[in-house]
Image 1: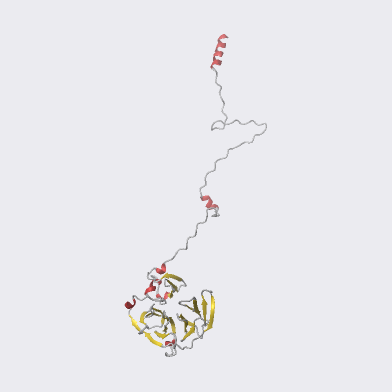
Image 2 (image 1 turned 120 degrees about the vertical axis):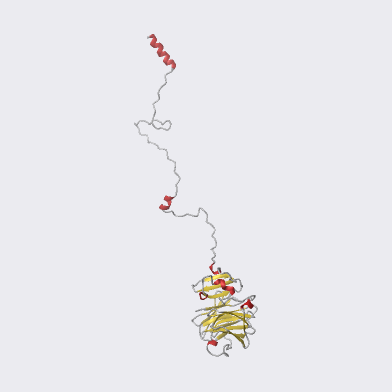
Length: 314
């Protein structure tokens, strides 16, 4: 299983996988800029604004590195804690100013350390009954919220390591959104999804976009905070394309399709007959009928009178 982390201020990202390697990527160069081997696969990664990179290892221990060269810092962060589940962690997070590192353990506690110098332990937040899966810092660095593997959400005062009531954190603005069981990301679950179907959430550094990965292999981008229960169900249509010119739009039509379209009747062409020598010339058609009509001669009145005179004389 691979883990990722992005630098809070620089164009850098880190990744680690089951091959026990840690890789640093330059986002502007779009290529790997550093690599080093790890003693065990990493379970979590976290950058600090001061230039450190923390890697929580499977089986226990947190490795502290210089972020740009991936050189190891001479610090045994979890050495003062009892062996076993107390030293195994899967959740990391630096405060927004990079002054404090929070480490969530499989024993259900969150251990706080001063970043830099001797990395002294500040205290322990203990209330979860299951391993801590994720955590978020408030923008001012005074509060924490955390999720456990049994989907429990708890709030903490980072200065006194005491638990806070949920009502006391209503006005808190969170710098990150790694806890996927939280009020600001409740819309990412949808109305019918279960908490275990949402695997990971991450808020963009700009603050306005939330990335959500679920068990179906889908990555969704939502507006942050995602409060609406239908936020995960919304879909955006692709940008409409400009219509093509009518002359350039040609489609092949099948005979069945062409037979269904109405066609305008074509005007009948005039019929012509070839004239053969020796054949009687056809009479010209008069009127609508093509058959020749006999013309009856009319008798002139003078001719009739002359006829009558000639008859009398006879």
